[in-house]
Amino acid sequence: MGLEELQHNFLTGRVEDLVKWARRNSVWPVTFGLACCAIEMMSVGAADFDISRFGMEVFRGSPRQADLMIVAGRVSQKMAPVLRQVYDQMMEPKWVISMGVCASTGGMFNNYAIVQGVDQIVPVDVYAPGCPPSPEMLLHAILTLHEKIRTGEITRRRGPASQRPEELAGWVPERPDAVRLGTPR
Image (cartoon, rainbow, N blue to C red; front, side):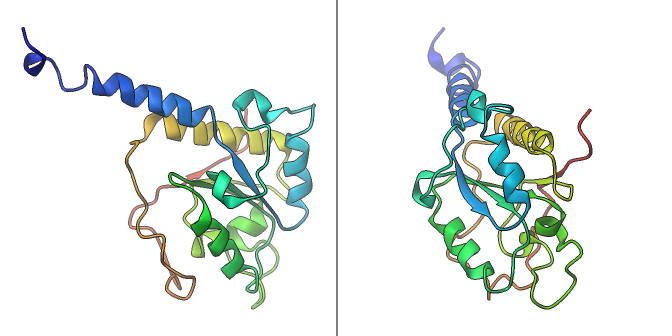
């Protein structure tokens, strides 16, 4: 029996599982704290919650070294192009967690100065609700993202990274790809 008679996933399936395992256990977040949710995001890195057990002990200062953006807090219209620029500079594959009700929907700031949902600027993978969400909620969002990485395709791309916020006005993904979290049990 030669290799051509074997199932197509005999070798490639195992290599794909290894790549997914490595990606899941080495997600490096970039800091993008904009308001009070950033305090809760910082506490996740402290000893009480310790995200270093997930391979995320260092928040990267450069987007070129990160593959996860945690948007914590409200995004103003002036900050939206900066957010998109940081997202564009991140390496592929990249993921986004929208932390807090202000980042997810604009929250109580229903006015012209605040973006009504960060998903108008960048595609979001996991939404973590709350005002502000607790560190446990962010850990739950990270674990949900890990599960999404484990079960997803390793070659999936989101589209051209050259799109600018002006081109994304009214941007909605073709199919909903984000996970909205409830209260963790």
